[in-house]
Image 1: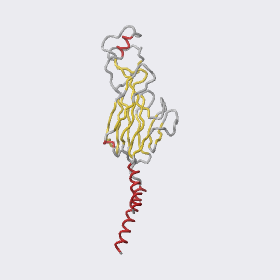
Image 2: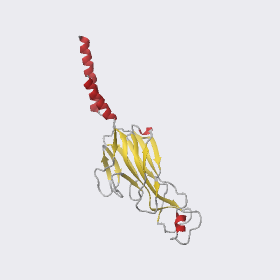
Image 3: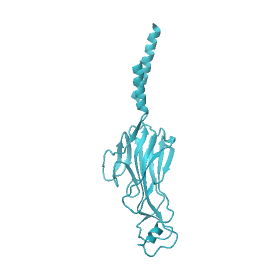
Image 4: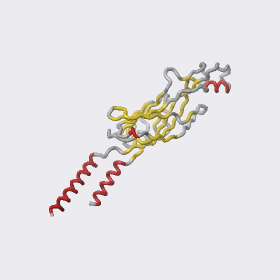
Length: 239
């Protein structure tokens, strides 16, 4: 009997253990536009544009702004934490007049001196079609002068509201609407919100989730063990 209950304990422990969605895309590169990919039993939306590694990349310039993550089996899961990198190229010009020399350091400072809005990444937990949890994060680094943006990593712990969900939706919320693309040296006036090259991007990786609920086979095993235990007790009682 000890061995039977030891096996049951292992079964339950495996059912409650955590796993990591690594976003090591399978397939690695589908068609040019991207599409759904799988990782460790989960399926999600992604784009191959700007894909530089095995992570999920949400990008405001010809990428995707929303990705839905769910278990392939359709069962619920609990999202615990995720690694996030963020970068922002949204700016607001100064309130004073535009400097005449658009190649000067004074012009560069004026073009980026206003208080710019922040594009956030929002996590939404969904259960049976209803939103049960939301959590947002801003970019962890702002960098303008270099095209080789290496954002800083932040491990985001998701709230307890993301328990037993069937979808985790990631959405980049860009606060700019309308024509917002500008080159730094294109004419624009004071208090103008603009982007250089692209507005916002987020990379996410290593989504920690709880294992999906105990499968039917596990429930059958528990029932069989319980029945066996009852039969044995009855036989002992008969004696």
